[in-house]
Image (cartoon, rainbow, N blue to C red):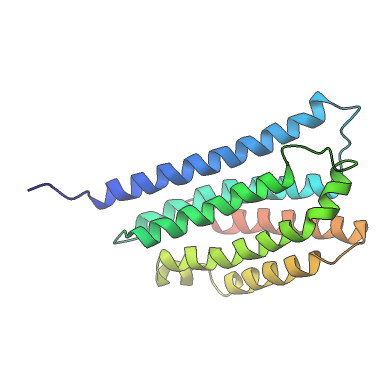
Amino acid sequence: MEALPTHAEYFGHVRTIIGMVLGLSLARLVNGMTRFVQHPGTIKVYLVHLGWVIFLFITIVHFWWYEFHLSLVPVWTFPLYAFLIFYTMVFAALTALLFPDQMTDYKGFEDYFEQRKRWFFGLIAFASLLDVGDTLIKGTDYLRSLGLEYPIRQAAFVLLSIAAMFINSRRVQLGLVLAAITYQISWIVRLYDIL
């Protein structure tokens, strides 16, 4: 009779797949950022776009860190595995939206981001909802450990992402991304400075 894989083997497998997708996402962000260095005269930096690149970098690194809590999952199933892979692929889609394969139809990153921001913020809102499912997977004790701030945070990210789809003021957009980066760093430091 063949032995079934252990919990640690399932967790290791899931962690490996998640790591591969997130690694590709981070690589796309790094490659995209190097365009500004490689072509400084032709590719202009748009601060709002750059801010969301930084936000997404911080968020992906954070996601990779807190996914270690998947070790709390007592039983692994294929639907659970598929959900986690799907959630991770949303980050890959977000990085592809920030740095498309080609920019020939746009005047630069400002033009591109402004034309595609509804897709980007829609996916940010969707990722915030998926995060609730991801948190529930880790158990009610884990959810409680995040406190009341967690559901408020997730609701705020969804609502602000939807609002950001329709904000045309560059100053307001810049303020929003700076607030998102500041809050994300604060959240990480306060809750995840140690495992």
